[in-house]
Image (tube, rainbow over all chains, first blue to last red; front, side, top):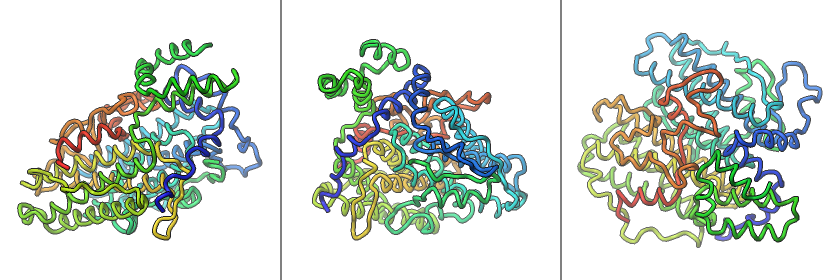
Length: 240
Length: 289
């Protein structure tokens, strides 16, 4: 068992695609200076899965790291649209304190969405997914329990999605970025949970006996998210 | 384009690139070795690799060191909550849901210690011989919560700073179950963030004086009574900026997509990482161990 942590270092280093070091550096640290070179490099990663006979209304997230970024962008679109609706039509009897906090969360999610949109557009303009159409018909926005229940679902799902996607990410700068966002989603999740049931911020339905939060695979997340998105989302190649 | 032209170009967008390259004594050595061994066409790859090693301060060289570092932080946190729950000064204020929450958090930290210890096996460092001395941390409910917020927010930054140092291909069997080590670290990371949010919610409560200016997320690196270094920059600052950072992936997010956002909202929308040296210094500034 003591050797378990030592496996794989050198082999994994050698097996990395040759373009990876340049791509990650140019996009996240030097996005402006090397945008052209980045686009050129990323064009080599396109697996052409956007033209492959998907039914109308299907959105493919794509493959590799761009697929992961589109995956995150899709989830952030969903969250941003949800909280924007809460701000536009607050539930009955919403306390000022809750309204202020949920309005702040709405801004965080909108900023996440706009960040991914701008970042993916800069790095892979031909591969960014379009704006998605939310379907919140199952949520009663006048009812606190319905709204906060949905918020809990979205936040816990987001945390699980980022936790599960981390190991799919090749570029460590993307991984760091995902890390910067996931902990904010976890803060949101904890806050919303505490609103529903004080003290349930990390209850056993999301944090297991080993003290670990959920880590969900792409299929599980998209199946859950699909309920709230009109377009069919295809994430089969995310991270591949 | 030669190497010096490339670095010159990089300096235009990243003035600290030379500092980062020279900080890492291995960076130029690695570059030199690669240059000798690889064909000209491969040279940009060697340069990219050198930059990858140079960017991102990492004094922890292997996964065992990373996990021993995490183990130390988890032991510190467990000991902190364990001492708090046993402190006579906190018996009265820390009751009901508040006490249950701290017991929940202590349980998670204990589980993290157990998991990391098992993962490290014989490579696990011993716990500090004299334990952890938190000084006057438990004198009042407020001082306890200030320390708790400091440890949880720092813990989130510490795990975030190490994610890139854990190879995603490591899948050891620990206690009969298989774990992906990177994913495990991320799963702990988000639990620490849940803890941090709840401690902050506790500070908003009546027992802590209704400090409703404190939110579950970090706004503009506001310390809320916690040592400011917890929300400050690490080393290098370009990789580990303060929690007030407004720039992500080269994009200044107060103005993006034709929309404008406040610094308060942008800073709160992203948590920042910290390097291990800065984290350890913060811990040693408030705890004897």
